[in-house]
Structure formats: structure tokens, C-alpha cells
Image 1 (spheres, rainbow, N blue to C red):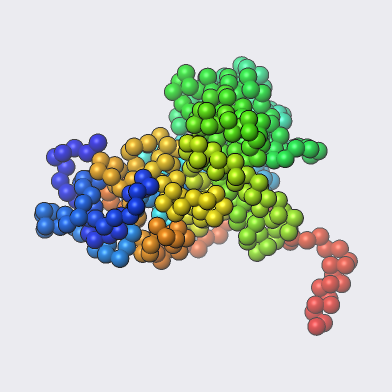
Image 2 (cartoon, helix red, strand yellow):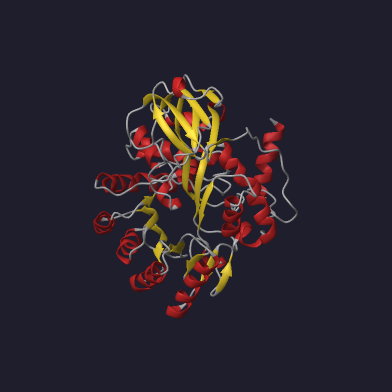
Length: 452
């Protein structure tokens, strides 16, 4: 908490405050002292020393900075798993991640959770951020996602053993325990398990569960004995149920839940990060990047078929957190960190204030900073946004960069930043000739178009 001797360092005057705790907006000044919020009340100007810098926030919303509970900062927006697994180099991935992280801060993200990373890039970047070597948001990180030989969402690209990309394949009790302990030794904040994956001939909705309940319990028990939480990627009813029963501390996706899965997450109040931004972007805008209509419908259907159960879980007391899966070509850094709030309102039936809470104070859980950040409240870390517009009525205001008038990180106003144009290093992207196979009928179609 704030030292009472810390002098006032900044006064934000006249704004409409959204506290991030779900309360209605109210008019107040916000006084900072060092990196903490010292006071939130009307008319603080008269009692604040004239030498203290001031920001006129009249006509603006003052709110907590966004927290993204599902981001992949080391991936650098790949178009495919082939590109992600075979066209990335460790040192260069770290350098580019350090550049990309500034895009998050410029988009109003003052904290994020990187669920898994290439090599140990996540741990190294987090340490650089905490040391002030790289400017950016607060960060919590996993290491390599744990997979079985059954794989994850990359199918046969996953090897039968060892590491590839962000994944580490483990076999049996000894390997599971050894890898969990190894990751904790290097300094991860979370252990991630890819509980489900895709198979060539699967017959079930969502993804196939690749871990047994006993294996999941082993991961959780091993990590918890060393004080580290566990998060699971679960797309399917049985995986979500078993992740909750095993003692996982957070679940990513939790789509296609049935009654048994719902009962398990409700009983244990396991926070869920649906991460529908990826699906929503593909469904709504996939045509702009060449995605087929069939693929777009599949992703839209996942939202539609999962929304009711997720809302039931939320209504029963399960925390619902906002994550965007930023880091892929369909969810580039800095562009879509607000979108999950929009999906929560449109598809899950949240009010704007409920969605804001999910993206701020509730999301502090993913950073390990519950009660420390994510709210405009005395004693909290001063991670704030000043936004032109009424965010309490329309969360999409946060998606227009010109509306983000000031980002305040750890009590300090962040200078405006616009990422300069960049080129990709040699070999960084998977080579491709186009989006279609050049069959004769394609050439004939092309010639007919030219002749018109």
C-alpha cells in the first residue's frame, strides 16, 4: 500500500470515473502519490499544492487500464502453425516481442498475461519490463505449454517428444513432474496445460481431451506445492470439467460446456477466460483476409453454442475474464484488446460496466495482483486511462485510438507512441505464393476478368 509520506505527484481533475469494480460512474478528481492512487473525491484541487501537475479530464472517462488475460507476445502475428513453429528464432523473437509490447501500452493495456511463449521469451521479457529495461505494461507469464504426444491444436506438427514452438511434450509421471519443476525454477508465474487438441478424424464437438484426470491432478498438485497456479486450454465439456476437478486455477475458453462441466466450475468458482476475440474477428472480418465462409461459420457457431453456458456460470458466481489471444495474424497487437468487452456485451449479455470490470479489476487475478491494480480506488496502483467518450454506454469507444487521450502507467503519464513501419527479417514468415492453387479454371477465370 501507499506510504503516507509519499507526496502528491499528479492530480486528474473533473473526470467521470469508472472505478472498474462495477459501480455506476461518478464525478471525481483522482490524486496520485508516486505509483499509487492517494484520493478519489470531488474538488481535490483546492487542497492540492499548486506545484502538483494537473490534467484536465473534463468531458473524459477516467478508468483503470485494460488488462488482457490471454495474449501471446512472443508469437509476432503468424498466419499458420508452420510459420510459428519453424520460422522463429529465439533471440530475434525476444527483440521483436520487446518492440511489440509497446503497442499494447499505446492501446490502453496496462497489464497482460502471456499464457505460453516460445522458448523462455516470456520470462525474460517480464523480467526486462519489471526492471525498467523495456517500457510496457505489467506482465505475468507461463512457460512452454505442456502437451501429451496427442498434441494440441497443431496436430502432426507437434513432435512425439521434446519442445516445439511454445509446446513441451511430456510422457508419464516423471516427465510431468520434472517439467513443471523446471519451469518453476526458471521463474514462470503460471503453468499452462494444453488439455485439448485436434485430431484428423475426431467425432466430437470442440477439441479432443488429451490428458486424463489423474495426469491433470498431478500437474496441479506439483505446481501448487511450489506456490504456482495452473491454467488450462479447454475446448470441450469433459476437459473443462476435469480441469476444474483437478484443481486448475483458471480455464481458457471453456467452450461447449455441458451440465457436468458447468457444475464443476461453479462449485469451485474457477475463473474462465472465453477468449472469443479470435473467433469474432474471423467470423466478422475473415473474408477480408481470405478465410472461407465455412471457417467463418465454424467460429461464429462456437460463440453462439457456448454463450448460454458461460453466462450461466457467470450468473452463478464464476469470474469471467477478458482475453483476446492477441499475437496471431487475425488478432494483431494493439488493435483488438477492447474487442472482448464488445463480445461480452453483445453475445454474453453483460452490461458495459460488467464487461469493464471483467477487463480490469477481475482480470488482475491473471497478473497475481488481485486488489493491487485494475480499479480506481485509494491504495491501488495508478494504472489508468483517460478516454474521450462515454465508455459506460459504449465499450467500443476504447477501440478508437484517438479516444485514448492519456495512458498512465505506474503513476507516470505515458508519452504517445505510434509504431513505426517495419519489415520482416529474412525467413521470419512462411513463404507462400498466394491463397489459391493455380489450376487451369482459375487461370480461365482470371482471363475472363481481364477481358471485361
